[in-house]
Length: 105
Image 1 (tube, rainbow, N blue to C red):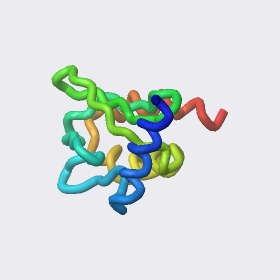
Image 2 (cartoon, rainbow, N blue to C red; image 1 turned 120 degrees about the vertical axis):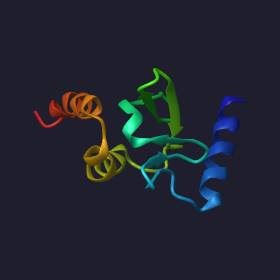
Image 3 (tube, helix red, strand yellow; image 1 turned 135 degrees about the horizontal axis):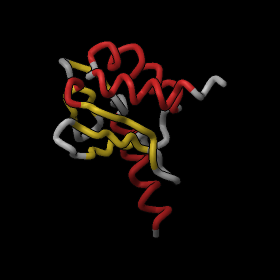
Image 4 (cartoon, one colour; image 1 turned 45 degrees about the horizontal axis):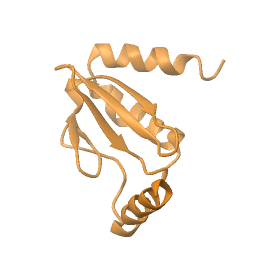
């Protein structure tokens, strides 16, 4: 049952032909949700079978944006570094740097 539900979600995401995540007009967007970049305080990968980004905002909400395992984490991280971090809050910049400063070591 679980596998068929996940398969349907992944197929639906593939067949729509849209990007999994986009950065546009000051927002980081997933398929059904968008978060203002200047409201993001933290972002991390979560999930076991289907990966998603767990985004914490300045108003203490957590928003989940699924990747449907269609795009590698490294590619998404590069987009975040290139397009989100330059416009992010100082808190998010610190949290992101702490999380990924140990990856190359």
